[in-house]
Image 1 (cartoon, rainbow, N blue to C red):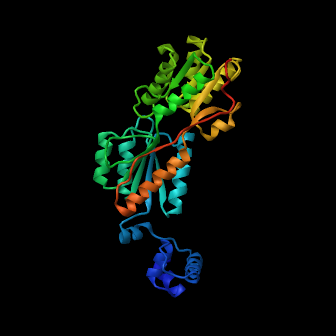
Image 2: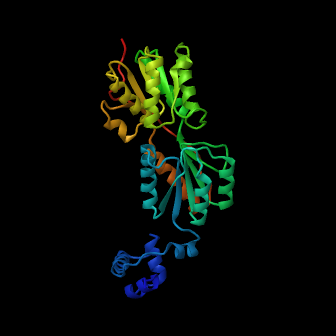
Image 3: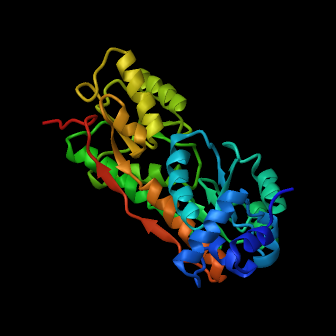
Length: 334
């Protein structure tokens, strides 16, 4: 039979309330008492029961995180920040892979309802009305990451995608590039697709460079789509001197295709990404990119969510600062 919190209290010669306070880091006990309780927990191999805890404080100390693609480096970098913060606050993370088209989103929201999670981080997907209605019925707080909504009670944490793309293209233009192709994310995507395309177009316009539709190719943020898009660019617009990709994975795909065709980056074509994933530092040559601080975004979103869970108070949305990270895939044209 598994040991109970009562067994721990009896063996450590303290009250059940004291054991509970030690488990939840609530204070009100001496260091000596904490050491005695911790040692007893180890000796008895006691495992706190999440369901029992939930009956007491109405919480399971669990949050749900929904990603369209949990295998992507983007999701991994975000999750690292999320997990780091929630672990320090004694929460656990349940990760759900909703798939690119969101066809599993409602299914996973129902699962998270059944698991009685305390809150949800919703990443990189439009918060549709049906999702919002489900979340409202669950009566748990939610924070959006790398997404945005007009629902007043749903805060979001992201960078300004329009401005970040504008700054990336402006950077290429200041390096002397006038023929700049863009590999966009999913066509019509209002979160990370359309705003980045608009930033690209406005930066060209600001420098008196006309927009040419043939220079704009759509992908889906993945490495494979970057490869396909770069093949199309080399066929259709061989005169381009630079490519701005709306994700690092697509930029790395473009880089691999350019190399496969016997060309050099940045001598023949400059390539710039978006995200500053860990992969951007690993490729050869290292990728110049727009940095969105994914780890920090994950941490901030977790902090906001846990604050909402524990205080019942709303949280403010936050736009995080992006920056240009110069490495070795963009050259200046003199």
